[in-house]
Image (cartoon, rainbow, N blue to C red; front, side, top):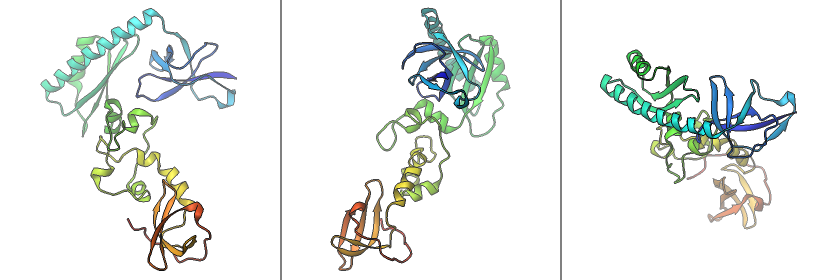
Length: 276
């Protein structure tokens, strides 16, 4: 058995599993960890969990120690360097009129490498920009092109639902999103209503998709004839999140009922498209 804990390197970043060994850790503790790029400061975001060896994640690395006062001083120094590097790179991009948008700058704990994340519609020849950055900061430089979804995750913001966008608040991985998911959830296909701040389909369409399908399986399809407490009728609308359906009775009356109140499911014809 090994003690495993979840670590994030930024508030909106992905969570990674690390070997906590015998360290006494709790949520929000700041720690120094080994990564493929070298030492880094991360934050504990889960409770310690003991796992058998056969269930351990691949390429599991160890937590070196809890952060010290000196570590925190270096972190603050690096944050200042990142801000300086961001402003310098931004000026050089404008001066060289490069078709790219700078999004974020990340400096390794030991300052051995600085990564500049950007978005662009096409490939960008940034060789001269790299020379400028190397000459200024005297360290390894990486320019990394990211997608607009990852850019939205970094910047954050408020979605059309009035809440913080999913990618910046709780979604660890951004799934592939398709128009089919919107259709299955009876969402309007108006681009303004199904697009997020990044201009792509909203991540919540993918996040809720499987649960929506599971709930839909337990509901009678539109066009199906069913028995209700008020008589026999045909399903004309579904409200899957609320677990309710709208039924048109034989006398033309429409009623909304909970699916648990459906008394029987007799033979029916093929389902039809629900009315909106």
